[in-house]
Length: 145
Image: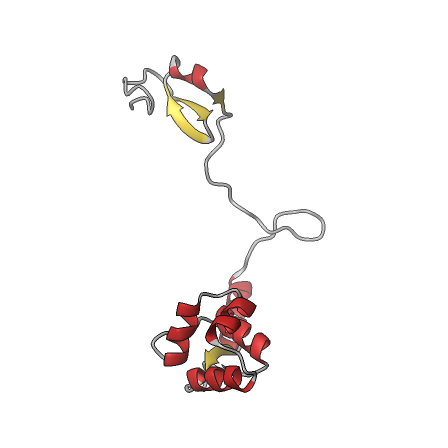
């Protein structure tokens, strides 16, 4: 293995050193340029714990319950004529696209594309439209249907 700073082959084990916010595997000479790190793995595994603080094993039944709940949760979907609803609501309030953009902290170009139907807003942006304009453009549906 080669040093990540000088490129020389490392004899023995490389030294994990934090230099300028990055953890690098370096040779003994280059380790003086940073702070030597403990020999811990880069990735930490998170284990859920029960009330007593003991690790909790996820059984097959638990996994199936989680999957079943995910399937049963209704999903959010935009109505088909979202662009017309948004435009009419904006016009009924007497706002320009610039004013709506300022109230929502969105670019006017984004509002233009959404109102013309060239762009479909994600759920987060659609909820901003709903809140700002007092409209409903998101409907829930079940995957089972």
